[in-house]
Length: 302
Image 1 (spheres, one colour):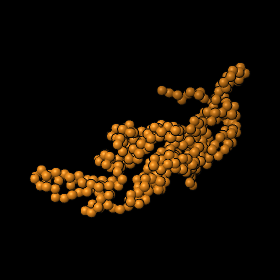
Image 2 (spheres, helix red, strand yellow):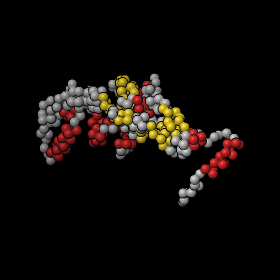
Image 3 (tube, helix red, strand yellow):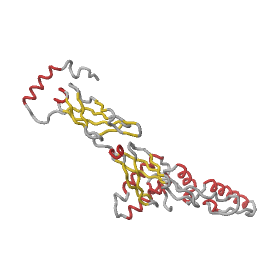
Image 4 (cartoon, one colour):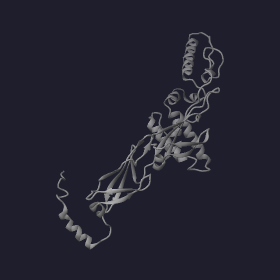
């Protein structure tokens, strides 16, 4: 790979793992083939970005790249052998400076598993590199599970099953969907990290869900049974009389399911004032001040 991997992702060499991941996600979303159908330039950029993140997103590969540069990207590269070569080369230069000739040969191709003979022999078949990818999900997809398609460099389109209950940062590993191995070795894996987009009405806390539920003055004061939408379908929720804004009512077991666990669903009441003028209502509400057992701002103090 001729281009500098840090420049491809637009980050400094000192960037930490989080900064590298954020840069990759931003570029991957911007240049993804699904977002730019038929755009060859964006497709090529997406592949280069994915390949760069495959190296810089892996601590071991990043360390080798920082130390050896593009040489570390060759198939079968062995960092230990590369260091041995550097030590040998330094020794040869020192001997040459003292007037000695080259007394030994070091086959540089051994660094990539292709040499023969000598003390640095190929280790035979080796497992291929893992590939990294990220995918964005709607909350419903994360809750219910989904099957999506991913365009993976050198692999084409891969169908991925997202299990129910996925969250931002969840990891899905597809065995054998990574880079091919060396000398007949097994393929690496495809490692997918999920990111769940915020929902316009729901908030998530682990396996629990919260919804701000608008109610009328009458429903809050008198109590009522109102229909609440959940991912399992609408559910009747009983609102106790004299409920206040901010009251949290629980629907047990209506949250997110993951394996043998199930979260709860919380409705947080939001009492809405009427938005049209009504003289009779205004008079009735004025009289309602007499129904408070204490001043509503009694405990306020700065």
